[in-house]
Amino acid sequence: MVSVHLFTLKMISYSTTQREINRFLAITIVSMLLSRWLIYKAMQAVDNPTLVHIILNFSIFFTFAASMLFLDVKVFDVYRFGTGLVLIVAGMGIVQLSYSG
Image 1: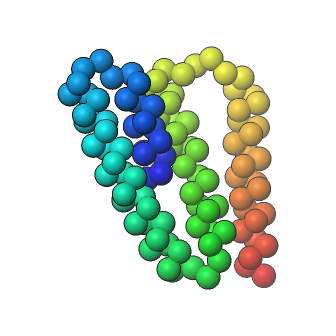
Image 2: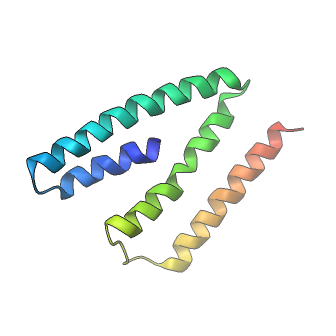
């Protein structure tokens, strides 16, 4: 939900009509409120807030997919980007394992 909020902020800059801008603003506000409520509920469900933060970091994958689909982002070093994503997943997994001991 956080990545929807961030991505719609970017989409506002690509909007050409006031109707599109209003639509993206509405989605931005709703997704921001909903994501904060979901974060609040997640914080109630876990003992360690770091776990919620780890899950929030996975929003990069949605933002990446949405950028590829809707913004037609194609100019980047695939090898370095892929390596970075693998390192993110590995790092999050290691952090998660440190709490499940």
